[in-house]
Image 1: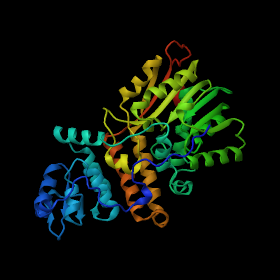
Image 2: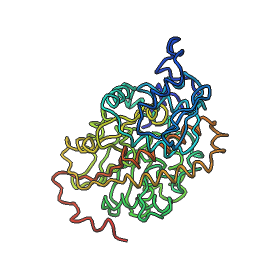
Image 3: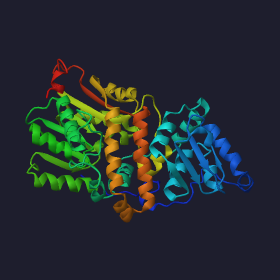
Image 4: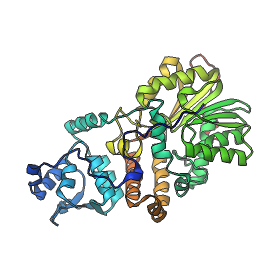
Amino acid sequence: MGLARQPEPHTTSLRELPRQATGDVGASASWSALPARALGRVLLASIPAVPVGMVLPGGDEIGAERSPVARLRIADLRTLLGLLGPSSDLSFADAYADGRIEIDGDLQGLLEAVFAAPEDGWMRWLRGWWNALARRDNSIFRSRANVHHHYDLGNDFYRLWLDREMVYTCAYFRTPDASLEEAQVAKMEHVARKLRLRADERVIEAGCGWGSLALHLARRHGVRVRAFNVSTEQLAWARERAAREGLADRVEFVDDDYRNVTGRCDAFVSVGMLEHVGREHYGDLARVMDRTLASHGRGLLHSIGRNRPREFSLFVQRRIFPGAYPPALREIVALLEPADFSVLDVENLRLHYDRTLQHWLARFESHRDEVARRLGEPFVRTWRLYLAGSIAAFRTGALQLFQVVFARGRSNAVPWTRADLYRP
């Protein structure tokens, strides 16, 4: 059964840009009188390992001695002040989106230097504490609005820069020169092989996107799939495609939250949804898997993650993925413990996501004028920053991509080796 549409979460929609200044670091009258050069020097001192220069309000330039990979042109004192607090990533992103910060030089190189730079313990703690204050509501009512914020921007928008299958998760590049189309099909087949599917088995997919994986499993492996999602746009696309390809009798796309999943299955799969569950609801997901998975069943969780528990930045939480959290591997494993699931396999595809995002960003930029006409220039700049920042995060190891395969603890229907995963 579907849920009625709920109010939007308390986040700024991507369609509402440009925004007012965030106000996280307010500029009082006394602060605004401080010389821009002094503030700029403080900012540069806080990021000593980042080779960046600045053109300050009024035209003064500092940081040239760093041999910068890029220069920030900062429009006004208030924007400069916003870069000095614990919410500086959000202030920077909003100012870049609105044109109050311009970047001369290598944006990608700058972001990689920022992600790779060491952060002192005090500032890391302060940012972590500040980010943890961000409102993350993944209740059954709010989750639909969180999904709508990002995934219901329009199928035509995503068609501009995703692959033909409309897969919006990490691809699997069997060879470095594989195309994005080849790599996304290879990822879906990689998942299928890890699940060791057999014809007419029952599969439950939680969070199915535009339906490509469910359709691939039914078409190539002859299974029956019930796929759950709460994105109106994605479900419409998936159902139309299933009907067009003659697979509607084998794949059922259900408009409902994962917490309402019922029935039994031989395999449970979730690709790219765990990030949106939120760790406070991991128990809900564990109970769903426990009540649906047969005694011989297998499962796979595919998720962006971290090496240690840490929130997404405020920029990601407020502007891109409200409600999102990237779990550490130990948090994924802990999710499986209450039901006594055994971990069979763990694979990290971090560098595959780096390459996937490179393809996405290049395609996005090739359509930037069309995106700007539809959604505005600030939207283009926000998404450029999101995609380029994601490349930097995966390339520098700030983010990981985990695939975890599991089964019932007492099940002996488990693979003897991994050899079949890598056969031609």
